[in-house]
Image 1 (cartoon, helix red, strand yellow):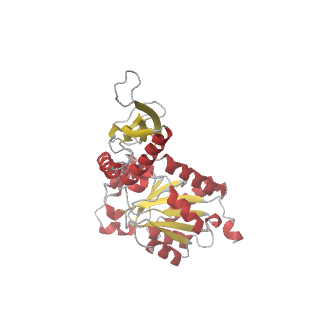
Image 2: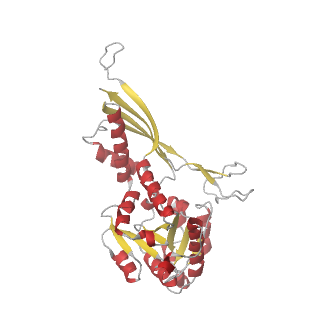
Image 3: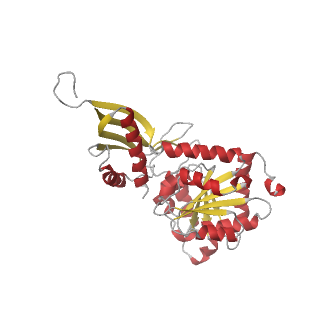
Length: 240
Length: 113
C-alpha cells in the first residue's frame, strides 16, 4: 500500500539479486569437488550422445589399466541400469543413477550416489552422464575435467551444432575410428569445428575395438591424475 | 529439456527472496541468459508458464536479456569475429569468453504486504 499519498496502489519493492540461477547446484558441486580432491580421486564428467561409445570406452580403459589404476563409475541412465551392469561385468565398481525423465545429472544426484559407492578407494571416478549433447553441459557436478565422446558416425558438424557442450570439454575423444574406412567422414572438418568451439582444442582419436589411440588417452588421464594427486603412480591399487 | 529444472531453481530462489522481504506477490523477474549458456529462451518461457500457476510468480512478468557470446584475446584484448577459430590470429593465445554464458537472476520486483 502506497503510504505517500494513500492512493491505494501497492508498493513495489525492487530487489537486486545478481546471482546465478544454478547457484544451488554449484554449491553442491563445489562440495563434491572438495571431497574428490581431498581423497585424491580424479573425477571425470564423461558426456556424449547416446551410442557415442562411452561405455565401451570405459570397458577398454578398465582392461588396459587392470591392476594398475582403480577405476569406478557412476552411470546416469534414463530408464535402465544397463551401462552400470556392463561396467560391473568389466570389473569396474559401478552404480547406476536412474534419472527417470531428467536429461542430465546434477551435483545433488552425484552427491547422493556417493554414499553407495566406495569411491574413496578409487584413483579415477568416471561419472558417465546421460547420453545427450545439450543438457549435461549446463550442470557442474564437481568433476575435475569434462571429456566428450564423439563418434565418427555422428557427422562432421556436431561441434558447430552443439557449441555449448564442446566449449565445456577439456578433451574430445573421437570414438569408433575403426569405422572410418567405411564412412565419408573428413576428420579435419571435425577438428576445424572443435577449433571454433573449444578455446584450447584437444582431440584424441580412439577405437575401443582395435585399441587405436588408447595409449594417448591413458597418457592424458595420467597427466590429469598427476595434477589432482601430485603423484603419477597409484598407491591405492598396490595397497589394495 | 533441462529448462524445467532451471525454472524450478529460479522459482525457489524467487520464493526465498519473497519470504525474506514479506512480499505478497512478485510483479517482475529479470534474467540474463547468455547465448552460450545452453538455455533456450523460448523453452525457458514455456517452462515458466507451466510452473507459475498458483505460485507467488502467478502474475509476474518475465523479462529476459539475451547476452551475445563475445570472445577476446587475453593478451591483445582484440575481439574475435563470431564463428572464428578460438585462437588469437596474432598472439596465438586461446580466446577467453568475455560474456555469453550467463544464467543469472538479476532483479525481482515484488509487492510488499
